[in-house]
Image (spheres, rainbow, N blue to C red):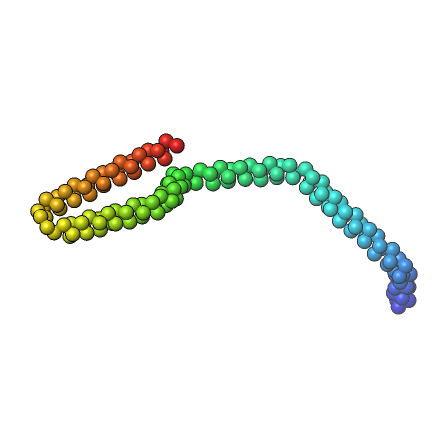
Length: 152
């Protein structure tokens, strides 16, 4: 019995030599390499077909997002901000007008104080009338200035 078992073991040893094992391993490596190459080339061929479809989908997505962004812009608010910015350039002119008004008021008050002789009440009335005339004249000039800038 021992001899039969020993004979079978020896027959297997002859069949599984290092040379045979190397050939079997190389054969499995070649099959694995072929399968990997097939997967690699099939992935490349799939990518060549779909970029046009992906580009079209991405382009559509970009266009929709741009349209949504434009529709959400506060156009009226932007116009109002521009108007306010333009008015900001006119503010120094108003400051100069206020300064001129203050100086004219100071001049009038000095005149009133200096004309203490005579009828002081009539002098005050005439000074107020003069001040009102100047005020109305300045208002007309401002209106003409605004109309002139609005038309040009």
